Image (cartoon, rainbow, N blue to C red):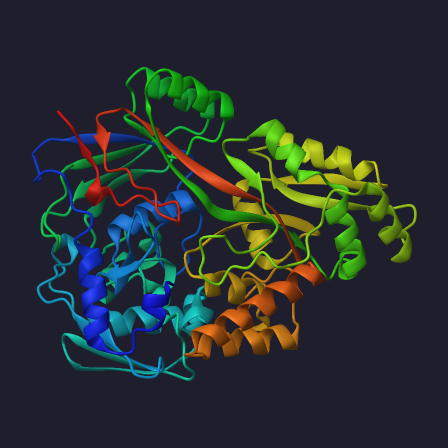
Length: 514
């Protein structure tokens, strides 16, 4: 959040700032009949229920199907109005949201009201839903709707980042009770929202079809049909774009493919430094329970050399869980330069002079990646043996979410720094209830995080967040290794592909120039 948003304590300021942002990006043309955009989708669909959705490719579709009370500006990342036109709070603890009137649900489910907001949040919080995002809403004490277009939410403590919590992402996405009940056990394949596109058909082996929601409150999108063709292989996706079989490639992550497409004049839609990639050390595995071993691991691998060798356009070395564009980020933290001799000394001090062997959880679909091959080689030079534990993608996700690994990796896409810090550092979010796969539990860090989130003093917040980052970097429960850039190469005539800091594209802004 920016300083402006942090200082919002009255509705007048919120409305002015939000209104300015909400008109910053509009479709280039009015809706036209018959326009179809074909997009490469790069993995097996995994469902679109906001209660348990995961993986960026699926979240991209959900972002266009659902809405939140707030959303994110596609270019700046600023909070903007969505289903709420404005909000007010005097203490960051009691939040009043004024809802947009006349918003229509997809597929004939009627008008959106405050009851839908309350149902959506209660569903996330319901233990029977088993949502990994329940902790994000756990601070809610009460919700009431004095009328169909007002929601008042009372929190157990002040939360200056609450506008992120209710944004169009995961737990913030609003669902319709009747649609959820009608879908039954097929709810993840039958999403119904209020966004610019609705789910038309899905073949999990080949294609997903989204159709324009004609009654979308901002007006119908310029493109009528979005075809997401499932093409897992990067080289095949590049050929498909060059041959005109697709118009846009959702995530291209091979240097050689990007170079080829750029040289041929394709548009290189991109966002830089959108997310950090971390190594997750399972503290229940004896060597990794020792911070000296974790530091030895960090000093053993030259990630700067690896990223330059493999993917200089796609990655850059990075040693923080937060990103430089986040307003609470600090670079005043311990860093771990490549130093194999120091790594060996730390291993000896920790009681492992001859090293040790561990297993790195990965997917059989990816196999042993080039990055992992480099890691294996660097670690072997200090006596650490890394073996690969390769499983199918569903098993990988299940085991990673359950914490059943010795070492795993995670990408941390988020605009809200609290989503990262609380999800991965707070004891309430330990696996399998949340994403704290390192089982990290430092009462001092927990206290500082909670105080930072509650504080209305910007300087105090910044200092507390800085101290959290310093402590965590010193203890290394997670090892940030690089940050990612995202590329969506497309035809020159495809416009409005603005990739936000969640690596999502708002297709309501996208058009095809004739």
